[in-house]
Image 1 (cartoon, rainbow, N blue to C red):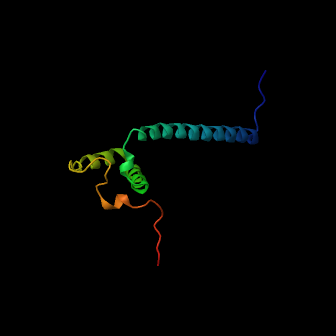
Image 2: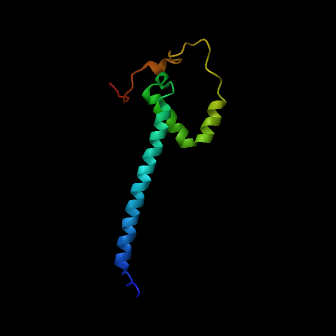
Image 3: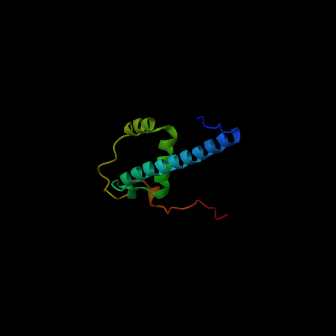
Length: 104
């Protein structure tokens, strides 16, 4: 016995339902992956950065690509051994995080 053929409207509804399920699966997988990356941060001394510096650093690395960012960062000289751990090496990292606002 042959199955009745679906109308174009029924096929479209089925495809749209599958598309929604696939989009949900993509988002679920993206969040799981981002969660795994977030767990890595727990073991890193990120407190040496302001939140803005940390966000800018990650955004720049993502924008230019991981391999390019790693290559560029490895080319930089090592941090001075005279600086103490936990003490920011630049004056800007002691400023407060938040939006830049003008008082003018």
